[in-house]
Amino acid sequence: MQAEGPRHPKPPRKRAAKASPKRKPSSGTGSRPRKPTTRAAKGRPTASTAENRKKQKRIDAAVKVCREVATDGWQETVAGRATDYVTDKTWNKLFKPGRYELCKALAELAAETLATKKKLHSAIGWVAAWFMRRLRRGRLAETVARELAENLPLPVDAKITAVARGVQLTGIVVCIAGGRDLTRCPCFIDLALNETKERVKKILTAAVDDWAGLAEFPALLRAGAE
Image (cartoon, rainbow, N blue to C red; front, side, top):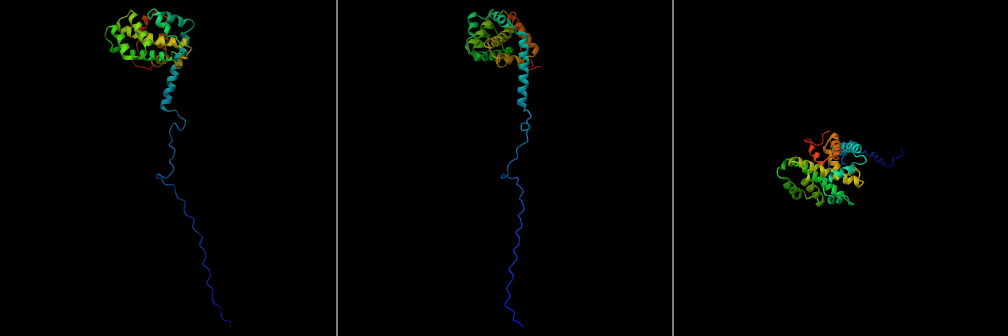
């Protein structure tokens, strides 16, 4: 028999490395946050966008009414009615170039006057002084209001409303004369947003008659009525 040689041990088998299991993304701070699903993300209008669209719709409707009323000659007729109570000197100053800020001042003056009418229960001289002290919206706007207040032959309560509407209409005429789109006229925007279409038409129509008649249009109790 041949002598057996030395036995060599077999090399150990290499075990295949086990694939590590995929880790699920943790819900901790290290994971990428998911984008919240909001109405805005889906393209739906937000509350503020919807409100702005509603306002623009009201303004556009009022512009349509204005175009029906403010035909040829309306501006000149209204100017004639205004100068029954506002001096020619003051009126002519309104139509100098770059009067956008003036219309804004007139709009603020009219709005505040309509809103605070019930608080004013004194002589009209005190009302004119109140315009000067309380609002301070610019000297020319105050002059228009003061002259209307001094010259409109009305009782105090009615006078306050007529002054406010007269100031508002003055701003609208200034914007039309300056070629400004009414959708950018502060006085017209206030009128459109706070009055019904029917009232807008009546106020614009009343502007061609004696401005004492503007006392028939106090602010609505509920602004924004359809």
